[in-house]
Image (cartoon, rainbow, N blue to C red; front, side):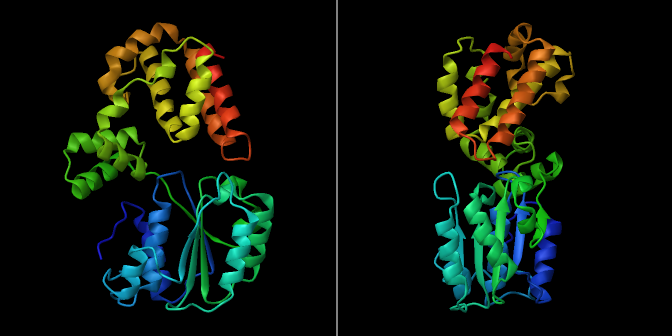
Length: 319
């Protein structure tokens, strides 16, 4: 089986060693921003554990019955639990607790991958804590989070924490060229625009990277009432806030006459220059700060639409 993962080799090696030495922990906590590769690595790790034909204990064979079942999402000893709507709720954790006490049906372990665990409500978090305190011997829980800070300290202390960082531009560019057979310039643009986030870089390549060179409408909007329209767009696609930051950053760099090499959206420089007079330095700094603050708020239990609406209004009126 080919390794489907781009980057994170230190983490992969650590997980492979855990399986080889038969020291797989009862709970792991993978932390890193959306699209960085946490779920891909979690599935690879689960496959590594459950594979019946693992080569030297470190590479899933990809051909055995267990590997095929995992690929088809029907292995009885592997479950992926995602938030129900905006939250992960206590009923989901209680169902996990009812199942996890039984022995695995086919593999050596029962494995549960819980995504977006920063979105657990308090009741769910406290219920999960009880399971982490006394996990069944033949089980492994893999928690994925985009915001480690909001996780209960007691949950963090009972997990092995693995931090997923974004990849350097050169490393990601090389991997994209090898994996997708694209031109080096295209791969480099995707690596830069994604800011080292593997999932986003792949999406840019698949959807045609030129789409991301279109200046966001919110930069040229002056009507405060348009905030409602933009709020709906960003609530549906909050990952676009990262890209929005790069546009304001480019404006800030152009306002300071920075060299072209520092600009992210080089194909849109001429258009961006026409916006510079409308954006004094203080306004751009406030805009970037506002987006970062909103991104942090979205990791909590706030009204997400309202938080994004306030952000859009501030960006438009320049406050």
